[in-house]
Image 1 (cartoon, rainbow, N blue to C red):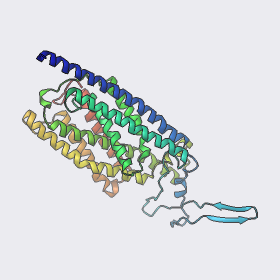
Image 2 (image 1 turned 180 degrees about the horizontal axis):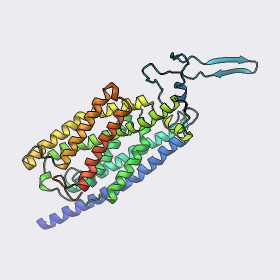
Image 3 (image 1 turned 45 degrees about the vertical axis):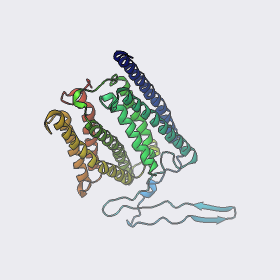
Image 4 (image 1 turned 30 degrees about the vertical axis):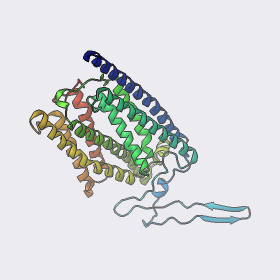
Length: 368
């Protein structure tokens, strides 16, 4: 076989793998759609009779003293025995803190809703495996890391985000309430990838031929996926906290808000979840920036040049550092710190999309 024939055969093989990758990505979108509807079914058909915990927990006694939940009261009568459940009563402390039980989850605590939830998680896991296969096929088609352009970054990012979610579930963390929000955003992300950001398989520019591509970009993708999970927790915390505050003030939230928000963890649990997620990945984001500067010195002869991508990576680092500091400061805990966390994630998103699309710099490769 001549060299030209071998080259043509290799090219055909690469195009074939790229086609397989595209097919797998579209297939994963179809399975994610089924998972999305299963999560919808979990929320819709889960019991609504077992989600009235927050209102009872926020019913304060006039004297302001906390009263522990007592046992069920049995009332005997000629017709039989009636059992009355005493609502859990937890009052706010002098500092204004609340001890509110977590909601039962999207399934509402019943068997039917839980069944839909388990089906949804199974479909999510299947879609993850299909999408992961698509990412691997894309990497094989170009014989390099599958994040050389924004299309590849998108499909890898969404894969890792789902992987983080499934990992938390595997660690016995009660985070199934993320599933509906996750599949929604993953479908939007993949839809954007295959329509607007799609780039045909191609080789990298010389500056990207480095082992730092595997280190720097992979950690950036992982950090973004974890930051995303933290941002979902933060956003839901703000909704749940407003709901609890309305109950404390004697207000009556709408039926839709009650049905949805009563099933979520308490605002304090959501706040703690988001903080732990962001705090755990922040050191890795610090390493990502350091690794990028080392790669920049190798590729361009300087560690830092205030390139737009470098600048916004640093702004994101500062924003998350401010959040972590605010979260440990008494006067900035709660909603104020949550707003900073969302601003920090918005900075990460702009660094991800905005800088690549709207700003020219050394990090602009392959158009987008």
